[in-house]
Length: 341
Ligand SMILES: [Zn+2]
Image (cartoon, rainbow, N blue to C red):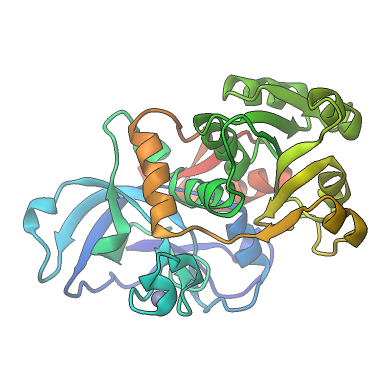
């Protein structure tokens, strides 16, 4: 069977659609015939090189497909079922896992980062990583959900404790996490200020439910935030951009505000004015992936039709280098998907 592997880090030329042995099925596991996968920014960091990536690596974290075989101890009525993959791998036994914090498990892995990924014609996963998805979703949509929904829910609810009627400012409305965060924040009853870089992307953010929009190429961000909040500033700022946006994130934050970040796409160095931090009683929160409960709660919102995956464009899996280039160009709104048919 074929899979996308990297043997070295580098440009899109290191992504190889190549033959690899079929994965072996053990007890408690299922084999999934993959129908669609989607890209995350994580795929780009992994390709370019971050610590802890085992080479060669099958890339990719998000997938959907059909169960084609089950290992010992798994009910064979599951064969033929449509599922998505929950990409967090955790031990289930440590202190963190036993207290519902699987995403800080000492042996935590993310498929496609520090354990083998999903960009393959077939994968084998543990039974606790497969999730049935609602009938109204296509395979492409189902493959666009897990990582961004789990990450966004963890940031907004478990970390920033976003409350009804609070104002949240969301950077990168067109990104996978941004487009999901807008919807989760609205489902929680918050007021959303979404930021994007083109008028087309701003309109799409509005159609996802954003109450106010800021075009960062045209608008003065601080003026806009002040006018939207009567000078009070945002209660929560959703960060994943890093160096380029950090200053404005901190300046946009009101008293008692929380900045929550899951990424540093534009650089990792940030300055903090400690006087503002303690005087305004603000918090800076780091977040990676999400707990099992964050995933399950996001899944309930999906099942109830309150949030939906946003698919921008679909590439055939054999054209994955082009899909990476497209994601890196920043032209997309939502997820870039890979199809296997
Ligand atoms: Zn654990």
